[in-house]
Image (cartoon, rainbow, N blue to C red; front, side, top):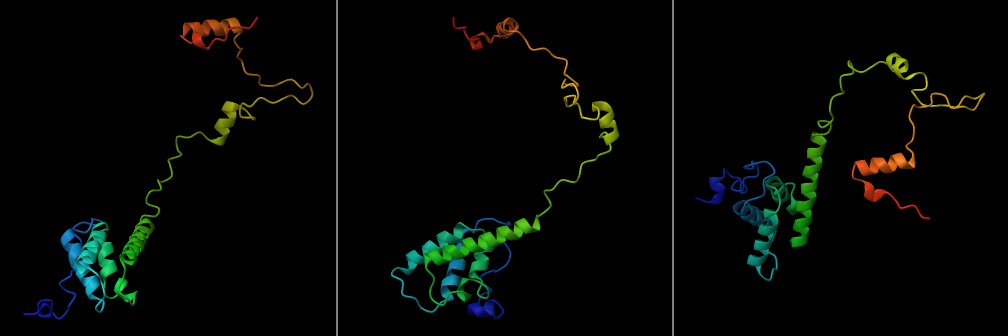
Length: 184
């Protein structure tokens, strides 16, 4: 019984084009080998110095990409074999895998767009504008000069420490090393 008979007339049926064990999982060695055979078998005979080394390199490249990416690259309808007329180099295979991987990542980002935005917060417990103006005044507590006298209105109620008070404060909290010795 031939391979074609076992796969209901589809010569590519033995290479499952759908269904990964886990989404975004790396391609296994056995799957990578199957897909390398599929991709390389899609081209007419090529002049390669060492076909086994080349095939092993392709398998290694495929093992670094998710299963879905390798399936897309090796697809006989939409994959690399339909884009290149001549036998691909390793660089071309890797480049195609990277491009397809980026396309999948872009689709995933588009699919999840907006899902990370949190819903608007509940504003029921927040004060209204009238309550804020009543609490802080018309200038929101910002000191302004009186235009007629030049005096500062709404002056804050605090006093600066004198040098002696500051030195005592530093010593009390173990910050004595920050006190500069006055130059005489």
